[in-house]
Image (cartoon, rainbow, N blue to C red):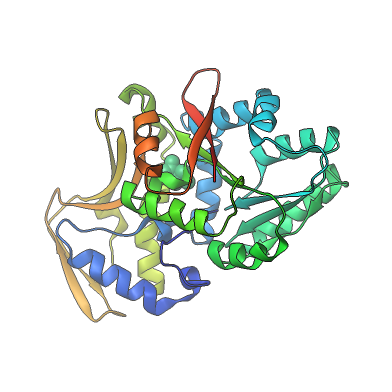
Length: 329
Ligand code: AVJ
């Protein structure tokens, strides 16, 4: 589960009501209106996202799992591990570790020596992951870290061991390209020459494949999107009438960007008491809630251009829907 905000301080995310108020107030005053996607992930949002990952239309999970299951040897080769050195495998936003488990299994079988550090904002997710890994891979050293990525990385700098960072699931796709560059630069600043970043990204492809991933037939993604209004109702004492808004995703195939919107079904005014303001919505007006960027080699090269990383390997699933890029610091 990734609730990354570029400038996130520790635990800003769920627990800081002031930040939530400010972000919603600013977002609803913008034109067009926006709500930051990190606010999807309350308890209900986490569960809905888990459901999304299992949807037949949401190919991203299965594509990256295909890489981790069937191209494990290529992944390990690209990680360029020295036979005798003890390294650290650090995952940003580990969630349920579904894909990583395949890699861990293979590293374990091949007798590599390493510590696995899953970092996540959700301590609940980390507890479950640790328990699961201790059962299925008892020889793997698992050291969970709850909190902000950069705080954890800063603390891990001390060890001087070679590091491999995993940032999977196209989680970077929620950032604009400029933010993604800044984020990768910052990762570089926390690493040493020779360290690796394994970046999993969804690739640009046709609309008939991408759009259904954000507009599934069961309406799970719609519920996930609209849930953010319910969260605002509950936590910020607002009166969004959920029946008067609908999920409305778009995909620009040329640019390779999927955007989720919440569209107002009528002219209406909504009061958000905790902010002390009302917001007017016209019929058909759209609130932007999420950007899911898709990539190709040119875009990735541009994004890492002014960072300390060089692109060295690209590994794709059998359908070439998804890629794990291995970058070297
Ligand atoms: C977790 C950011 C990769 O953008 O595909 C899934 C989130 N939103 N369905 C994505 C999401 C709607 C997902 N990421």
